[in-house]
Length: 185
Image (cartoon, rainbow, N blue to C red; front, side, top):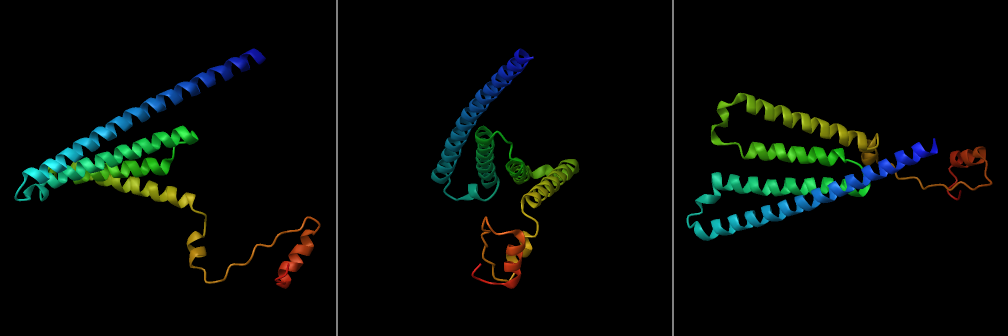
């Protein structure tokens, strides 16, 4: 029996090490993608500023392309943050994943081509995805926050000081002191 436990433990260690290597590789690849996207975005913006005398590039499709590129870099940064967070804590942060997905859907909505009004399934799908992701994010945020936190923030009562319970004090003595309102105890 101890040999099978040792074998399972060594297998799980091997899996963990492999998982960590894959996550590190993904981090490096994502960092390269972010750097390349950032360089490309910078070159596009600088060239558009230098070559466009009328400024029309910044009004229509050019602005939408630049916003799409900017949001692509932001999404890549969020993916990098997801990976590094997983490396540090070994936990997938669902809130961060939902924010990344919401950003990706928002980017898709922003960069929709001009003829997209003729595709109702696409628009309905993006709407359903947006509402679903926003609802999931709201539920996650709501489950993370302590209950009554909204009421606690709006409460006008002054905070009561924390009363240290002395080791020799019995619970009855502490309860009586708290009920008496004696500020010294």
